[in-house]
Length: 367
Image 1 (tube, helix red, strand yellow):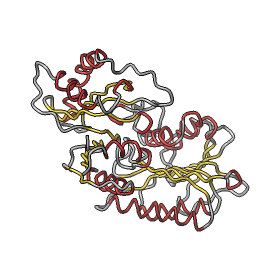
Image 2: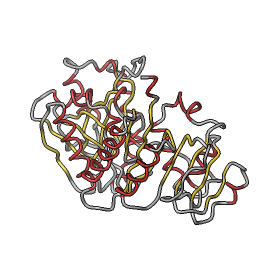
Image 3: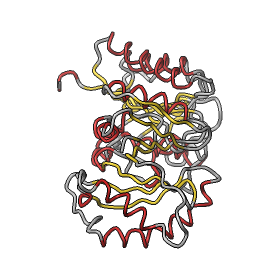
Image 4: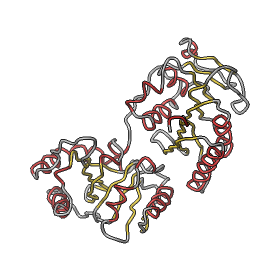
C-alpha cells in the first residue's frame, strides 16, 4: 500500500502531480507521480511502504487545491472476471486486515474517473455497488458507527469493468462526496449557471454550522463584475444586501428582491460607499490572476471588507506555478500589513480553467 490515487478534473493531471509531490516532500515523503493526460486522476507512488497511508492522514485534504479526492490504493487489479469480480476485491482488502482495522469502515464507494469515456462505467458502478456492499458486510465491515468522522471509507476505483484500484480514505481527511463531486441543483430563478460556482465555494469553505452566522440579513456584500447576477443571487439568497458592480445589466428578478443596488462602474475602480462596512466581497471577473490578486489585496488591506471569495482564471500553461505565486503574493501583502488571515483555495467541480479562493480576516483581539 504505497500509492495514492487522486481524482481531478480532466486536463489538470499535471497540476495534481506537482501539488502532491510538493505536499509529500513537505512531510519528508518522496515518490513519483504517474500521469496520463486527460485521465481525470493521478497515481502517486511512494518509495517506502506505508508512506501513502501517512500522507492520507497528515496532508490536510482541504489544503490540496487541485485534487477532488485522496485515496490509499493497492496495485491495480486487472483481468477481473465478469463472473466473479467480488472475490479478488475481497481478497485484496483482506491483505491489509492484519495491519489495518477494516471494521472501522463505514461505506463503500464504487467509482470511476470523471471523463466522458469513464462515464460509460457509471451504470456498472452503481449496479455493482449493491452486491459488493453485501459481500463486504458479510466480512464484518461497513458496520462502524463512527464518532466525529473517526471511520474510513472503502473505495473501488474502476478504470474499466475488468480493472480497478482497491483502497480506502480517512473520513476525517477526504472529500465527503462520491467521486469528490458535490451534487448541486441549479436554482430555476438564478440568472446564470455561474451561480453554482459560488454556491459550491460557500459549501466548501464555510462550515455548515457557521453559515447562518457568516451570512445574515444585516450584512452587506459587494459583487465585482456582477452581470447578470449569478454570484449576487447566492448572496441575496442568504439574506445579504448587495452592491452589484458591472456596466452590464442585472437580472430583473434580482432588482425585484429589493436587496441589490446596481452600480454601473468598473470593478477595478469601484470603492465601497462611505460609512458602509462591507462584510463580503465576491468577484468572478475574467482578468489576469495577478490583477485580481492586486485588487483583492487592496480591498483587504484598506479594510473595505473582512471576507472574500474570488476566482483566478488560469488559461496559461504553468497553472500550478501561477497559483502558488498569486497566493504567496497575497499572503505576503496581508502579513506585511500585520493582518491575521486564513486563505483557502480549491479547484471546485463547477470551476473550469480557474480556481476559487476564500480569504477571511481574523480579529486580532481574538487571537
